[in-house]
Amino acid sequence: MIQETKPVWKFENKKHGNTFTVEQFVAHWEVSLDPISDDYTPDEISAYDLFYEWVEQIKKEKKEYQNGLIPIHWSIDIRDMRPFAAMPFQYDFYNNGRGKDMLDFLTIFSWPINITTNEPLNWFKIPVIDKSWRVDKADTGGFIQEATGWKPSILQPYIHLLALEKACKHR
Image (cartoon, rainbow, N blue to C red):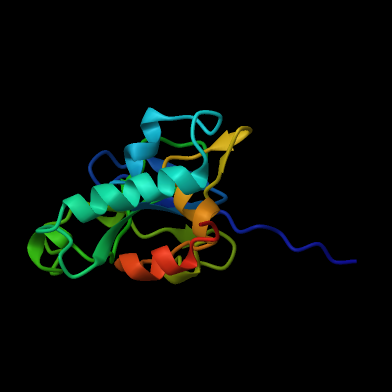
């Protein structure tokens, strides 16, 4: 049986020239206002109750989210490296989508290259992290995925609030 090897990616810090090698990049998502969960633990509030509390917070921000579209912010989680870096090619909410001044992974580092094949990393093939809201694993914003079964597609810029409310498996 042939065992497939995991790719190893190599990239450099553009400013200092340090070289890094990593086995995995993971796309980390955050829906606006989902850090509301940082004030709770799963044994204090269920995913469903926290979801509806979050919905109420979103609805209070009528001017910000008047069209029902809730922004999704992306970062790269590089296993065993910190801090996170903003994901390249995501919608830049602060500059009307243009993103030319956005500080992201590729602003700081070179494009990752597979050290076996010399192929550049395909950003659309990075796995999107699953989030949970359970006693044994509680992620910031994990209540959304736990209550609705939804997680974004890679680099998805928005989610419609009504779609999430309809997807909620409770009430």
